[in-house]
Amino acid sequence: MNNDKRGMHGIWNNRWTFILAATGSAVGLGNIWKFPYITGENGGGAFVLMYLLCILAAGIPVMLAEVLIGRKSRLSPIHALQTMTSEYDAPKFFRVIGWMGALAGFFILSFYSVIAGWTLEYIGEMASGTFTGADGDKASAVFKALLGNPVMLTVYHTVFMLMTGYVIARGVNKGLENTIRILMPLLFIMLILLLGYAMTTPGFTQALHFLFDFDFSKLTGESIVVALGHSFFTLSLGMGAIMAYGAYMPEKESLGKTVLTVGFLDTLVALVAGIIVFSIVFSNNLEPGSGPGLMFVTFPLALGGLPGGDILGVLFFVLVAIAAWSSAISIAEPAVAWAVERGLSRVQAAVVICTLAWLLGIGTVLSFNEWSEVKFFGKTIFDNLDFLSSNIMLPLGGILIAIFVGWFMKESHTAAQVDSKRSVFYNIWRVMVRFVSPIAVGYIFLNGLGVFG
Image (tube, rainbow, N blue to C red; front, side):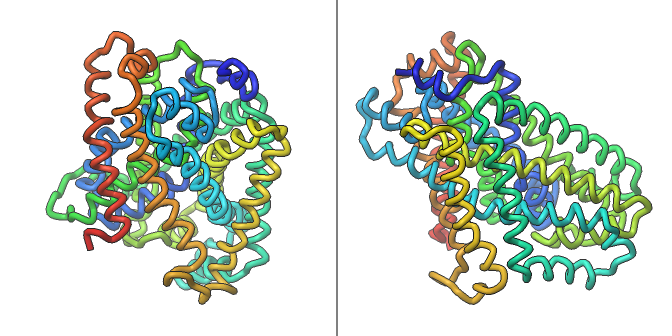
């Protein structure tokens, strides 16, 4: 059975292809858009340190568990859990992991495509010189005008979804693998270019101090929860994307070294993005804690006042678009893989899943304008989709993955996948995935439901 499924989906050519693909999945708007502004809101260096600790305590163990399930089953997340719950005589309830992950990814894809579409608009705005010499009012007006234009938002949402669907339809090797091989090196080159520029700015030193000086007086209980949550979600965990990519992982490659490399690269991108953003922010005496508008209002405003700022802006938003594109591809993959296993061709599956996600995304488009007053449970359509997927489905999926792998899979089987010699790394991971990660992610889940006020 596994060999049939392996032939159906394909296998990455080597370990580094998986590393690039998984890093592409992890590196997205969360790293380049969200990480800098939540760092600014939560005091800088102490928050970064807490974030790094959370990556090690919660993110890496769950990521390794996901990849392990994927490679052992060689199936989509939905069918993987159906097969493995029977194999290990685990409660059938654990089958919900696959369904919930694919559904969460589907919800996220629907609104992720809309927000990623904003970056396409800003590539054009920066190239046309819109922000050259602009003041704060103009920068805010440009962003508000975009959000208030449902036709323009729909156009960019459509373009981005077509970009995503095209790659997925071409399959694991011709589509995902070939695209990732181009996108990820390009992303790293752009990061290096922008970092080189940041090093020449007067705010570079201040940015380093802000990100790496530890003032624990600025760290609150809420900051720790935010760090824990972001460390988990930035790695694309709980939605089946990493599990699906793990199913295409070559059999003989080391899972431990591979996952640690992905975690390192993902964290490195977030830190470099933070250095770039804060170097420019501090060089222009702007506020680092300006929230979600940091990338779409504050940052373009800062670049608009710099010599060659338009070119830098184009580079930056192309970088963000590439990161978002690589993530969107992985988000859609679990549902597409399941549809292929159900009998659809790869092209048919990509068309069906992306079309349905596009239709649902129209609700997010209208949440920012025509339907902004239409609310369910006090939230817009976009807010509900975001809350349901990010605060409930992903952390709950993460908890169940850790429990299933840590407590129901045979230790001999997990060791065979991770490290048959049961090294110190394996023993530490097993303790983390059985005890530390479920508790840590459970705290995220309960906090997201408002249990702690």
